Amino acid sequence: MSEQDLKFMQIALDEAKAGMAEGGIPIGACLVIDGEVRGRGHNMRVQKNSPTLHGEMSAMEDAGRLKASEYARATMYTTLSPCVMCTGTMLLYGIPRVVLAENENFMGAEELMKTFPEKPVEVVNLDLPEAKKMMADWIAANPKIWNEDIGVEN
Image 1 (cartoon, rainbow, N blue to C red):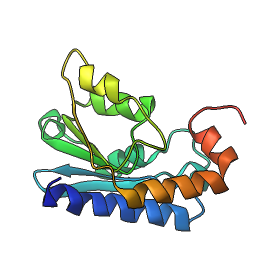
Image 2: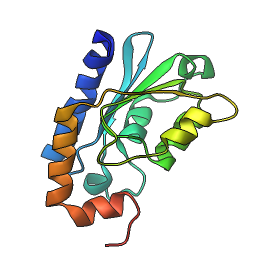
Image 3: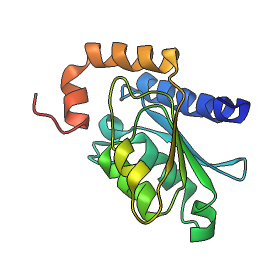
Image 4: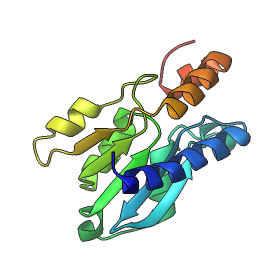
């Protein structure tokens, strides 16, 4: 666990907390290229009534249009293991590294990232107790919203 990974993960955690303070799902993310935050965001499905605005998607949108060569040097920091939709976006744009705070509350498409035939992604799990507790507490208090977010019938 590098100091740089912890520094950028703190930004993602801050985004998750901001989303929760807005009444949304506490999942945050930031896209970093060459040591610089290019995009940051949090899950805004509830706030914007959006089926697709997960934390990673929010960070990608905040970064705006980038060149393929920029994505090729990027790391996505996210507080939770990315779902198939977010994973697909990162694979499409060739993001080579994903750092997550935890995957205990939700195991996303990590195997797909790791074994993607065109270009496997390095997946690093920081396994942060703070992130696990924040998400577990939120899920326990909001099971219907959580199930909707991950596409499970209530």
